[in-house]
Each structure stands twice: as structure tokens, then as C-alpha cells.
Image 1 (cartoon, rainbow, N blue to C red):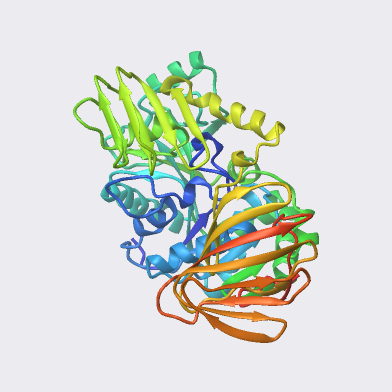
Image 2: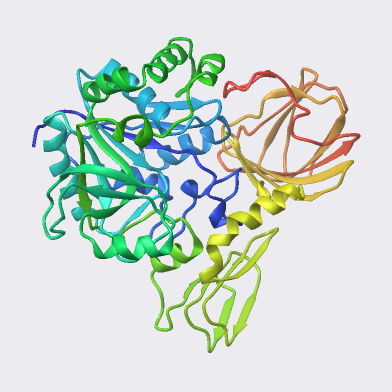
Length: 480
């Protein structure tokens, strides 16, 4: 294996609606910590499982604007400073994302090997996974574009399939040329595929040399390459983030890397991967990949008590749950939503989430707990003309200097110390003290202390939406 640089490209898009109500638009599944045995999120595990490979570099993360501070904070939690966190103004599928990352990587390394990973996968056998990657590097050094085909163990209709030109010996780590990509099949076809050793599940992970893929992008989809170059050239940087130029990126074709490159190139190689892979695409797959008790139950929460119950996934962070005589159920309880479903029906959850969106139910996309770069807030109660929040500000952090056109605010300090600025007047407040922020006042909240600042905010006015914020100064680049 060559000791050349290996740059992980981690794709952090996606909303993960099949894991609602834990996964929502405001905090999708790649940022969730789903295991009792592992304190890390899916994103954090994505990097950590490849971090021991020789030659591995800092990752390039690609995510959207809304989740940028969550991604940055989770990398800081595991002491990783990304090469870049590239912000897409909107999704344009995997071909543009991979093209952008390739262009960025080749600016800092001569011709690095790029390892493209999804941020929401689970892989149980890390040694087997890294062994397959090491073999993949040998193929990429021979100018091949490698994808990883997961050895199928059931006739899944939720995955795409890859057909190799030869039958695999799944006991060997040996790649074959790609004959065909097959979209998610009907059950009859999936049953045929799982018996035929030409077929593997399409994992959506890739490995290649940067120049190899740039040559194919130029050959097969020059329009994507052109607009990606323009959107990078006209991008802007603040903190660790790089924002693509919106007007250039908007013109970029919306197409997957499979369609743009892999279905056209003669360099494609599929390597069999048999390492306990899952894309955690449903509550059923999460139950399958979780550590269960003697009755095949996964129980997460201190206040859950079950009797004569088997094959269930039950999670509650706060509320008391009692289950008697349950079988094959998923029960997920959050602050503002309760999901109860048969495990065999969890693939239908996406349709139900779409129905909730049509009904304009806010809990379908937004958690009560909303993360910000300075900390987070929890929406306790909300009406059309007033709202109550519990705000947590991390030590040394500040909200923006801002004002509101439609609401006034009242802050009551619960714990910690607050430096409050209102129309250039600054005061320090402590526990049980409060301050009133009149409508239209320029104001700012800072935590000057060494412990978290906790306060209750009462908003009142004709409109209390989050978009009624005019920012004048901000430590995190969020100026209007």
C-alpha cells in the first residue's frame, strides 16, 4: 500500500426522516448519538473509524448552512479540526459535492487519495472495514475508482445494488469490474440478487485518486466541474467555514456520482464489504444494529419498565413508560412527540412525515431543543403572540448584537452570570435578577463566567418567529 495522503470526504447532508421523531430537519440523524455503548454521534464515528489508517488527513466536511455549527462542534468534541467545512446553499446530490471536495483537496495535496464517506452509516467490524480500504488504495493507485459493495444478507428493497462482471468469493477482499447499477428493486428481484454472488448492496462510499476523478468529470460531466470551479472561486470564508457562491452553485446539475461518473467510466471497481454495515435507514435497522437484552429488547431510558415484552425498541429520555405484553414495536418518546409503530412498518414513516409537513405541524421538522454556536435553547411554550424559552449560553460565548421589530423580551437569570447590553448600556446580572428588553432596542447577551449561563426568556409581541432578528455584530459570521 502506498503511503500517500488520504483525505476523508464526509457528506453530511440529508434529513433522516425515517428516524423521526429523533431525527428532524433541525437536527438530523448523522448528528445523533444512538448507542448506549458509544458516546459519539454517527458523524463522529464516521471519522474515528478511519482515523487510524496510515496517511489519513483532516477531513473535508460538506453540509448545509443550518447545521454548520453542529458539525463544527461535534468535530471539536473529538479534537478534530477539519480541513474545511464546505457549506452548500442547497443540496445538489453527490456528484457536485464530490467534485467540490476533489477540487479543494487537490489544492492542498499534489494528488491525494480521497475516501468518500456518508456521515450516517454504522459499521461494526472496524478492522475488516480498514482492511478493505487498504486493498482499495491499491486499486486507486492503479487509477481505478473504487466503490464498496456490501455483502447482502437479506433481500432488501430499500437499497440499490451493484452487479459485478464476475461472481465474488466473499471470503476474499478482491475487486471486480462494475457491470451495472440497479435501483431499489422489487422484492422478487431482491430475492434473486441475494442468492447471486455477482450482486452487492450499493453503500455510496468511494475511494479514488483526485486526478483520476477530475479527468472523468472533465470527460463525462464538464458542466458540473465548471460550475463547481466557479462556485469555489467566488466562495467566501468565515471561521472554519467556506460558503459556496449561491448563483454559481444553483446552475450545477442535480445528479448522483453513480449516474454522473460510475455508470459511464471504465475505471469502476467494486470491492465486497462484509463488516457489519448499515445505513441506519429505519427504526428496524437501528434495532437490528443495537445491543439487546435476553428478550431481544433495546431499552434506552431510566424510566422505562416492561413486562412480558420482546423484540421491541423503546426509548424515552424523560417520561415514564410502562409496557406490558408488547411484541415487535418501536416506541420513541421525546419532549413533543410520541411514535408507536410495528417494526415491520417503519419504512412507511417517511410517508407519514410528509403528511405531517402538509398539515404544517412544526414538530415534524423542528425540535424543542435548538442548537446555536453559543449554546442552545429549549422552547417551553409557544403561542402566536408570546413564547417562553429556556436559554443555555456556554462560558465565554455571546449572542449577536441584535434587535427585533415585532417583539420585546424579558430575561430572568436562573443560574450563572450574564453581561447584558441594551442600547450601549451594560450591566452584569446574577441568579434571580432580570432585565426587560423593549421592542426595537439593540441588545446583546454574553456569558462572562466559567459555568453555563441559564436564563428564562419571555417573548411578547405581534410576531415571535426566529426570522425577526436584525444582527449588527456577531462572533459567528451571521450578519444579516
